[in-house]
Image (cartoon, rainbow, N blue to C red; front, top):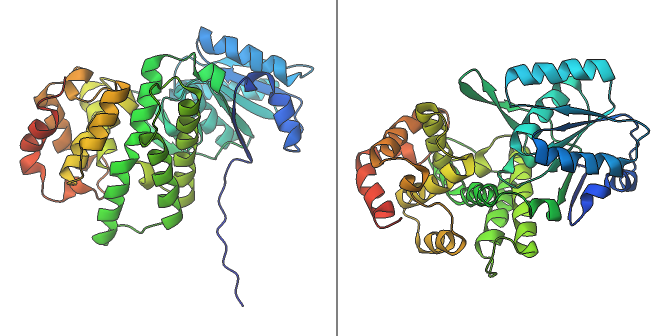
Length: 349
């Protein structure tokens, strides 16, 4: 009898708790790993404070820090030179999306194990097999290895800027339209469905969408958001593409980045575009709009500083951002984009 297996690179440990920043050494030992020369990669002053606490918790005889300025190719090269000089056996990325993305690229190229320690929950890049890197004036998505471990300290996340948390919510909520686009592409014979990845992505988003609490700062909500973003990243790793978490709403966001040099945070853009995309897909918007209102998420292009004309220009450009990715935007609906815009955003602040 033949055996059928699927081999997937996934993190070997994931911990989402309070006060984990002091427990890195303990978590590593519990997972049967041993490292003695870590390099801690971090960013601005606020994340540097957390990185020092994480390093102290590692209790290494020596450790080094590297502070990145941005997520550019130049910074990647600088970090590789640093690694050549200190020869670490482990990379620990403590910070936001840019810090983690640079660390993922370098860890992949240098074949080094990586542990991510996000200081906020602004997007699903914490554990995804993709890194977004700036190449001149362009943003590139690069395939990378998964980290061996992920630690989310809810006490640290609770002190992160509100705007970043809301961006993370927007990024996760956009899974709803991404999954619907995936179904559309499969019906048209333009893609193949992976039921396991679909299930994880769906569970990730609805655990947050169905939350009955009243505040995004409740620890139960932050835990669900962290779990949802992690599950979303794992879903992408399972299927080998970003399909479980990226559809027309992400293409619109990419077009906005190209046209207007990223007018807002990624999660804000895809959250707003998800409302437009859901209307194109003929989904019921009532539940989504109620959720956006309840938690004070940006819900209209105007809230991002965009005009109606600017947003619709991005919608028209969006299908060309990834021509191989079939979405609702390929369904000959762009001629009604103006009407859909007015129906979705006409009465929103």
